[in-house]
Picture 1 (cartoon, helix red, strand yellow):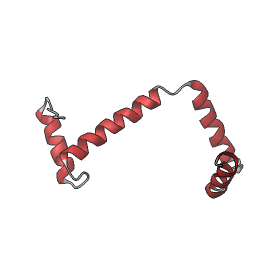
Picture 2 (cartoon, rainbow, N blue to C red):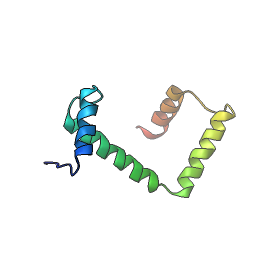
Picture 3 (cartoon, rainbow, N blue to C red):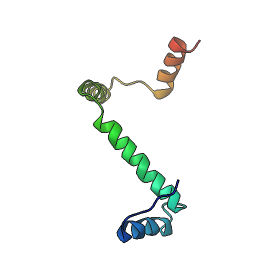
Picture 4 (cartoon, helix red, strand yellow):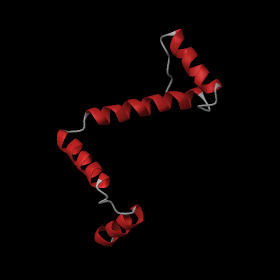
Amino acid sequence: MQVELDSPELERFIAAEVKSGRFPSHTAAIAAAVERMMLEQEFLDTDDATFAAIEEAEAQLDRGEGIPLETAFAEFRKKYVK
């Protein structure tokens, strides 16, 4: 796929990001921008029930009700991986 940027400002921005070392290439910088757009879209598509569940999980962690990640993975494997 070929990508053509419509403004010199965008071209300069991408070039500066590559020159700074943040990205190894112009392609990598543009791919990162597209990935970010995808994540933003997923966030916008998230429903209220999911946000409520995330907030409740954060509240549980704040109350000290969390378990170590290794324990959670072990329980998940025991329950779902046969």
